Amino acid sequence: DTEVTQTPKHLVMGMTNKKSLKCEQHMGHRAMYWYKQKAKKPPELMFVYSYEKLSINESVPSRFSPECPNSSLLNLHLHALQPEDSALYLCASSLSGQGSGYEQYFGPGTRLTVT
Amino acid sequence: GENVEQHPSTLSVQEGDSAVIKCTYSDSASNYFPWYKQELGKRPQLIIDIRSNVGEKKDQRIAVTLNKTAKHFSLHITETQPEDSAVYFCAAAPSGGYNKLIFGAGTRLAVHP
Image 1 (cartoon, rainbow over the protein chains, first blue to last red):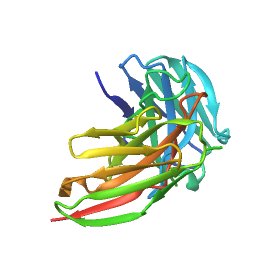
Image 2: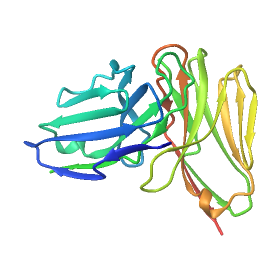
Image 3: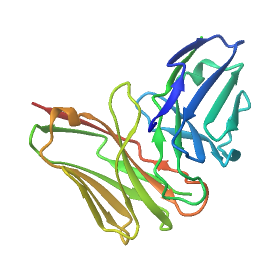
Image 4: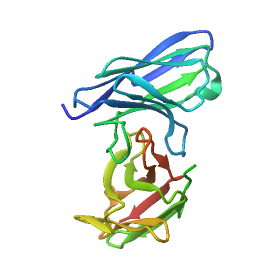
């Protein structure tokens, strides 16, 4: 399997809802990433997990809570989001997160709308 | 921290022409420079990358050049085809750390038949 998969593809949630995004890869990669992408903008890094440990949190609000249950899975738990959080949420993975120069492969994303 | 500037923001060419997209970076310690293509509604797709110990890399119609002294790198697409139409993002990875990528703002390329 050479792909990163994400579910769901689309999600509409109210500001009081709790929902989760899921990302999965079976390439043996040991680093996984969450990005947020607004329309006509580049991906913006949110979190990096390296060897299942949170390595980077780019000052993301606590209403976004990442979780890495094992080396193949990455979740993003959402709670009390704001309409401005509406965006495409992309997951990516790479062989390693230690150092730099490792190719990152993106999943198809979850299109999130907060009403 | 690292900052990446990308130009132009939009580029329109005729099918068969060449297209060039340029990026500059600020951190001289950055050592990895990937390029991603993102079609409308699709995921960013890694199309080519270059590391700081190499000056040029080619893959069929796509090439990337790196000038470490000037801190800029460029994407060259030859014999453009309508399916090359997409948004292209350059990125730079500062050395060390956790494989963090700093993206440019993107270039919207339109190839007209």
